[in-house]
Image: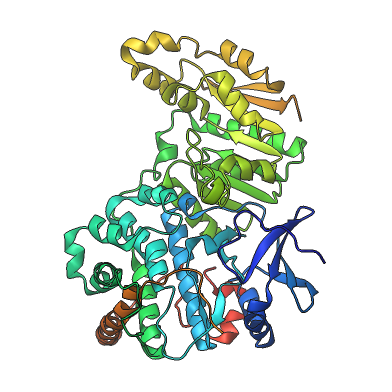
Length: 461
Length: 67
C-alpha cells in the first residue's frame, strides 16, 4: 500500500494521520504508535470505549510492519468547539475527563486534551482522536492538564461570568485560551475560590515563572496516580455543577412571535407536506431556534442540522434532544451573517461552515423567518442571500414576511431616516432576485398572517 | 516509549502538585458535607450528566453514558 497524503488537519501528532481514500476517511497509524495501539486493542479498551459510545468506532482495514490503517465510522457533519452551546461544551469537557479517568484505571493516559478531539454524533459528545491514548508513566503528572484548562475549564468559566457567547470567540484560539489571558479575564473574586485559584490563577503564575527555563534546569516533577485522580475528580465535579449566570432569552420565543396558533399550525403543516412529498432524509434549518419546526416534521429524518445565532437557543435545543433521547438532530451555533471561517495552518485545519455544509449536501434547507433579519438587520441584498442558499441547497423552504408583518415593521422603523432605502423589501423584488438561482416549485400564503411560504428548487441542482 | 508533540508547560507540571493538594482537601470536605446532607435527607442527584465513577459493566450499557 502506498503512502497516502495526510488530510490538511492531521499533522500535529507523529503517531499517525487521517487521509481520505476515495471519499472515505481513514487513519494511518505509524510504527511509533504500534505498542499503544496494540495494547488498547488487546486489553479490549477500544471495545469498552466503543460500547460506551465514548470513542468513535473504527475497524482495522490493513496492517503490516510499516503501517496500520483503520477506518472510523463516518460522522456526517462535524461541529467545532466554537459552534457549541454551553451545555454541549460541558458535556465535551466531562467526556474528556471520564476518558482520562478510564485511562488511568487501565494504566493509560490521554496525551492531549484538545476540545477538537471531541464532536457531536447521534445526540452525544464523542471522542474522535483514536491516537490520543498513551501509556501511563508512574508518578507522572497529567501532561494534558494545561491543555484541558485552556480548552475546557477556562472557556466554561469565562462563559459562566461573561455569557455563553464567549464560547464562540474561541475561534481565535485553536490551541485553547492561554492561561494568562484566562486568569486576567476572570473576575478577581474567583481568586478566593480555592478550586479556581489553583486550577487557573496559580497555574498561570507557575507557567509565567517557569517559561524562561529553556535549559531544563528545573527538576522533573512527580505526582502520584491517586493525586492525579483527585485532580480529575474535582475538575469533573466542578464542571458538572457549573451553570450560566445569565437569563436565557429563548424561553418565551414562541410566545413572543407575532402570529396566531392557527398560522403556526398551518406553517408546520405546509413544511411537513413538502418534506413528505420530496422524501427528505437530511436537512439543515438555518436560524432554527430550539428546533420546534424540525421536531414537528412527521416523517423519519436521518440527519437534521439545526443552527442558530443564539447560544442559549441552541442550548435549549440540545436539552430537549437529551430529554427526548433524539439521535438524528445536531444543534450548533452559527451566525449566518458571519459563518465559521476556515482556520489553522494554511487555513485548512478546520473547515469553514460552507465547506462542511457543501460536503454534507442536505436534501433541503429551511430558512424560516430569517430573510427579514438577513435583509433588514444584515443589509444583505436578496440576490446575495439567494446565492448563499443556492451554494449548498438543492431545495429551499423559505418563509417571507411581508412589509406589514409586525417584525418587519419593527426592523424597518429601526432604520429611521434610512427607512426608504429599504423600499426594495417587498415580495416582488424577493421573487425577482430568487428566481435567478431557484425555480419556484410552490408558493403558499399562511392565512391569518403576513407571511408567505416558498418551496424553491436550485436551478443548478 | 512516550513521546510528546506539544509542550505540556513546565509550570503546569509543577503546579499540579498544588492543584492536587487543593483537590484532596476539597474532596475531603465535600465528602463530610455530603454525609451530613445524607443524614439530614438533603442530598439530591444531578440528572443529565453521569458521575465520573463508572464501572465496567456500566460502560457496556450505552444508556448510562450521558443518555
